[in-house]
Length: 519
Image 1 (cartoon, rainbow, N blue to C red):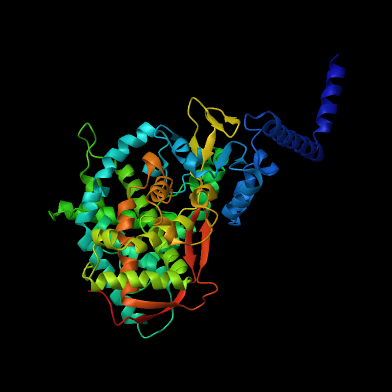
Image 2 (cartoon, rainbow, N blue to C red; image 1 turned 60 degrees about the vertical axis):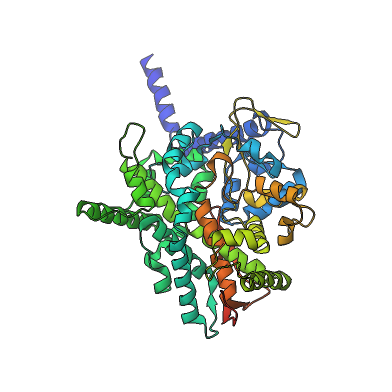
């Protein structure tokens, strides 16, 4: 008996060769892949929704297209082929029908695991809080400094930054020397948000450069952010390992772009705390408001949460506004009739005395309807975040054109796609035509109701009013003071999407001072 057992054991051991182990491992992996494909394709609740085969069985499909930056264009083409709903991962549906926005982004909808990446640190900011009740609680605390009444009080501060930016452009480039407008739009936006947020401009405009590499740091972190979000089951697992902890969860000591931004943030907070300890009066800005804020129990906010929110301001508070300004320049200067019509309006309102030397926000809204339409049309065609923003379908499920999305399904829209819904915007949906915003009060209300440029619903961007304050003033004053000329009219600039965030590059222009500049 013992001899037989020994012989059996010997045979088993003899089978454990490196080749056999490799074959067994390969067979196991093949089985798991085949099982996943069969399950997702034939037995998953979303099996009846249309879309590319590989998208339905693996998230690697969307990750690949995120890397090569053709997600938006490809999905637009796929919507034309399959209809208004696509299955773009095994568990995620993409809807291009703009009229579905109120349903997808209803007040009770929770964010999906897509947002928990660790790319911007461990602690949640408002942006990646998943539960809608948890988000509502913290949004109430953070909303005060972003209220429009507060932003209006900061208008003179915004004016000073815009004036300084225009003076600098005139000083450096008023002689007709060509320059890349793309970074200069962001320099202005960063100096404004830093003054509003932290008490002083970072100095982008004065130096004419990317101070501390902040902009490059943000851009460097975008692709990892986009990939981690799209691969969230893997992201959740890898973050729990030492590899994820060391290399994927952003930390101030990292050499990455986000790590650099974190160190810059920490320096700002330490300096402010030192100022307060020395008895220096803290100025009213976003940072001070967060430091002064108290919970319902009267306790200060946790410092890690404050750091997360300040990092969010650094990340998203300026670059996205700069993108909108860049888009306006590209679209307006590529269309001679739009530029001429815009300048007629600006000059007429200036001559009539309806615009101050530095136009006020209220004056622009009241007297420059075509200019406002240009802002809105630019942000329609070129939203700063042409990205997916997934939510979780609620307990009743959702009917989508005859197919049922059960509770718990991930569902999303993309502003770049819903803003190209021809059923809403008409057959010329791909054309830059500001007039569409002025032709019918009813249609304008519909466009505004179905606009996703700043997000949608209860989670709309808190910094929206700051961004609009800049966009309703700075570009108008720029056009008032300078006559820009695009160096390459055929290709006025290059729109780049990294990780779901867009920005322009290579926007080479020349400027000439106008004889009739403001007031």
